[in-house]
Image 1 (tube, rainbow, N blue to C red):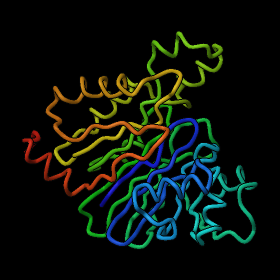
Image 2 (tube, rainbow, N blue to C red):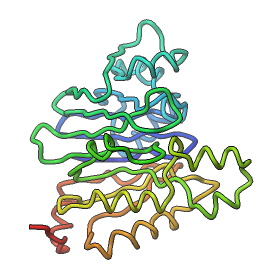
Image 3 (tube, one colour):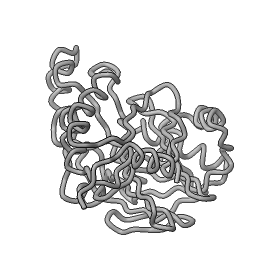
Image 4 (cartoon, rainbow, N blue to C red):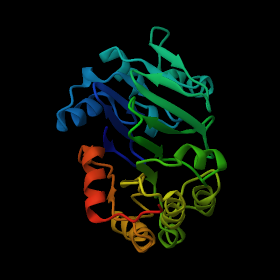
Length: 274
């Protein structure tokens, strides 16, 4: 199983998941042309994408989904409420497949589990994706104000976690955002701070977790080095020796191979609870 963030932030989000011959894009918040360009950058043909999964209706997650789907004849998996909220992006001829939160479905050998989360959107979800061999499980939670019991259930025992670390509390307080915007960002229906993301990651820590990619970094109220250092200071003392990285807005991350990360983590001497 392989994972790559094509880019993450307020100007666009998209994540590629690959397992065997199946390739899935989680959200397309870039234009169709830009999404294709970023896929070419990591040597993945756009026409090889098997499905597009939408987490919620915000434009930084949906703006290019319709046109990319039509251009390459790719099905879009979306909830009914999210579809209604952003229906101007789609046409009656689009290949739409509706899913329901808390009901798993299968996309060409990858089991997808969507769970409702808290965010200022109509029906936002986090995803857990498990490959057909059940050797790897990836969790994706890029927009949430706080972890709920459902989110914790979704992300239990993931082998790789893509988790938002949106803002630094001090930078947010000193930003030029109005007080109402600051309150929305920091609310239970907003985003996770660096500290909250680190605390949540510690709760999810288990011997099989071999990597964490921090996402949705605010360009005005955060810095990649702050997000990364906060996570490192929380996780490393607890024995986590796996991969830690940051997804940026402007370009794709490395195409991360979970098998290699697992081997590397075990070689480093990851702690064991056995």
